[in-house]
Length: 135
Image (cartoon, rainbow, N blue to C red; front, side):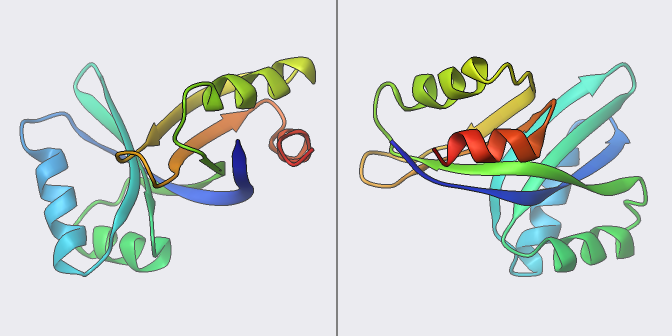
């Protein structure tokens, strides 16, 4: 059920937590013709952290920096394409558990039946996790 797994990059942006900040970021990237493949966001007190996987992280980072989003970094992540079927996430997580690999965080995006689900994760050992997922 795992269609592909690869090491990739995500953009991590720390911003002031305010109403509309995700709307502003998504509009900015849209205005630059950049598609967001997956997104995760959460608030920590007065700040918020956005994790973005885009179709062009270099252009996305450049656009964000030019717009004043200076607290950003590109981090390693594993990008997995799964069949969009019941049990696909179970297979992925069991493979990691069997290799004693700890998942630090996970997020994803999916569409209706017929297209794959994208799962983005970071683990205690991304290289080992990638090998386990490709078995």
